[in-house]
Amino acid sequence: MSAIETIGTGFTWDELPVGRKFKTYGRTITEADIVNFISATGMLEVLFTNKEFLRDAGFDGRLVPGGQVFCMAEGLLFQTALQGVGVAFLNMELDIKGPTYAGDTIHVEVEVIESRPSKGKPGMGLVRTRNQVVKQDGSVVMIYTPLRLVKGRENLHA
Image (tube, rainbow, N blue to C red; front, top):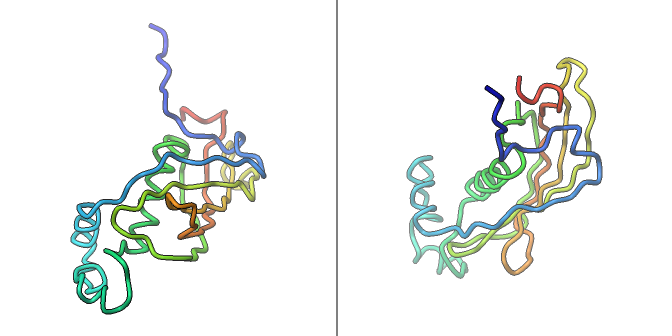
């Protein structure tokens, strides 16, 4: 019996040279997404549970926690670029540039800024990207720069 190819696999580190750019599909963040996230994480703070408090604080809608925006951005990346190849998330810097509200649609624009073989893990590489989370109006709401340990082509199925 011959092997069946698995589709949907992300990019190996050797397919991610410095300068490579790509973006994910978008995802609209709903009220239900916010309720589920804040309930699951315990972020039951007035910023995320009280519309009157938000209005009095000068916000135009229901805020999405920054942690949720990050998690949803990572989810978009796992669905498209990291499935089956990501081994470890090592570190990052994160900068929130502006608010995200219920009803906003986000996508992630990625640029590889570092890519090199791992010294301690043969067949794997270290890849750092600059990820911009962008809303439907083109505004950037978050930038983060994760460093990940990623499988190489030769150990993709290991």
